[in-house]
Image (cartoon, rainbow, N blue to C red; front, top):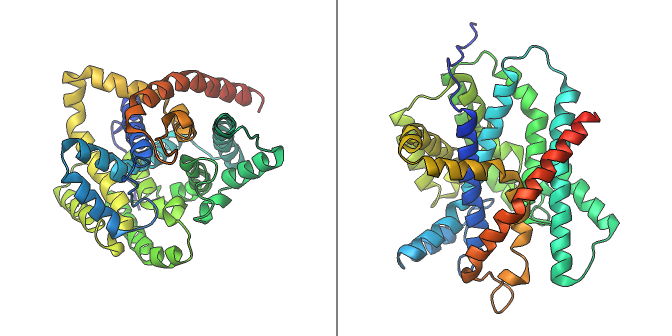
Length: 365
């Protein structure tokens, strides 16, 4: 079998990656804040609930402002899929022009970066908890949470997936994807775009069959590698083959995404469906935005450059009493701009600390 042709030019350049990261992180931050506002605790991120979509429709009918808030609260978590897609894309792009593969060096390098980021995030999270409650976490408890998260054990149960801070489940998922990437890469070396599409479809069907059983056992499938494999492989396929618009796939993706809001059997397919829709949309509009709205791309590109720092602190930060409503349970919508300003200010030095520690650790290994 002939090796599939590599795209002449990469589909995503470095500035595209940063812009997409910035857009995705903006979605995530808006989602993380808005879905903690009174009455907006709606989402179908890990578990399907048709009532949440009906609540979303009711919210949309209340007016333009309500539509924006409900849309970010309900759909904003899909920004995570862009990061998963970009991870698959980046890992494949990094490997495809290299000969040989040292698995221990590869995995330890990736795990080290995740561990440093998680460690910074956990220190920040427990510091915020101390400011809010006056209670220090014990060293044993800190270590236990760190191990459960970096080994991804916490991702396998509904009761533990959101421990420490909501967004931290992503660390366990990435560890799993890093572990299996080399095997997927070898399997995809000589596959065609059609074959890769068929694999993504087959995995989507498997996920649809697995989801009810895992849900019944309180296992959040979308926090595990199997649930996110279609999006991850889609990212790898983009690096390998590039991207060509396909009207039939686009229409099918739109239909799947709509059906997934109302019927459980289509729920797990909404993640790959929206990923395809977003990539298709970006491919059609990026040149227009770069030409006519350079400041738009500059802003999202900068957010993308500090996105990992934003990711690890935005969850813990919103738990401060400063941002809570009068009951101290939900968030105050009037504090969102203050929250955003503080988030961005803190993210800059934390991003520099993360970069410095990564360089320091790389020199010592």
